[in-house]
Image (cartoon, rainbow, N blue to C red; front, side):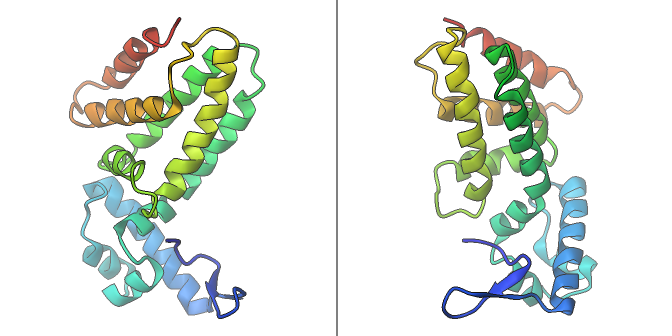
Length: 198
């Protein structure tokens, strides 16, 4: 399921541009969702997000049919940043170091909003979730970096990208539960990475 963005679908598969007022509502909803997720986590009340954006809950649901659709839209900037970084690292001289750097960036992203790691973990098993639009490209980007590190002989060949993505989300989730220990995520990632070596 996708979210409304620049255009609304019309019969025959074509798209028409979003009306100006609908575009303004969409943008306001995203701004308020980011603020609410930062303040209350991804479990923030959708009704509050709509109210803060100055629209009714029906307008929110017209743009974002469910919470995961809204989360997917909110995370697009971070997703593009992670995908862009993976492309930059794809030709790094040290494939294992490139993989490690990218995994650290994923953990940081997953820890940006409380609840993101848990939602991404569940979306990895649910292709119908709007959040799979985030998790699938991330998994594909990670798979390319992992394959290079494995071909270089610096990462065990029995390590899968699905395992790595679950581990990074689990680390972000653990760090979320220990906000007074800002170094926890890095320590856990370091321990995990030691187990990746042949």
